[in-house]
Length: 161
Image (cartoon, rainbow, N blue to C red; front, top):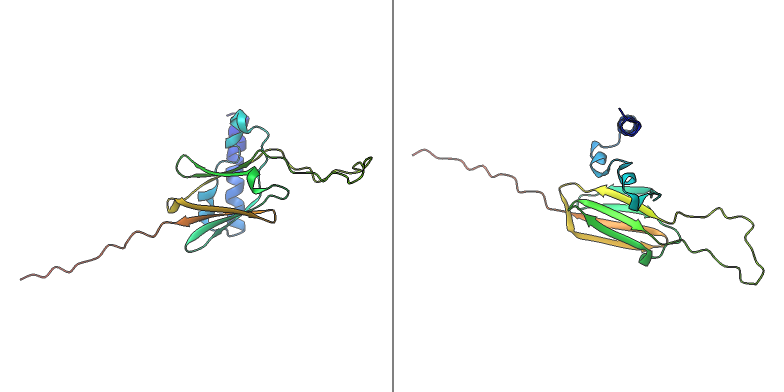
């Protein structure tokens, strides 16, 4: 077995154990793609993962991502393969320049990744045609509406004459 396969199995087992210990709903797994799936693609090599909160409400799924320093024009939200929500940014976080000539930084700790990428597998009841996104105060909010539940089968009594 390869190191990548061992790592994938470990990640899956670890996620299951954490979900069990913290009593996360089992439905949380339906949003996750394998954590290393994007690393095989050279296009995404070096992309940073974006921390996310996912809220499952009765009418929609809401994704909250902190993206400080990025403007809405730097962020792309797309749907790939009919059920994969993709959030990426190729933009660089802006650094404030010194107001006076001769200014220099003494410490640079707020360097953000140049390339951000996050993918989520959407559940079957997600309406991919009704997705909205807004970025306010460094927080990206993506709302994915849910499809209405299928109608319950109606039972008809058969009368015998």
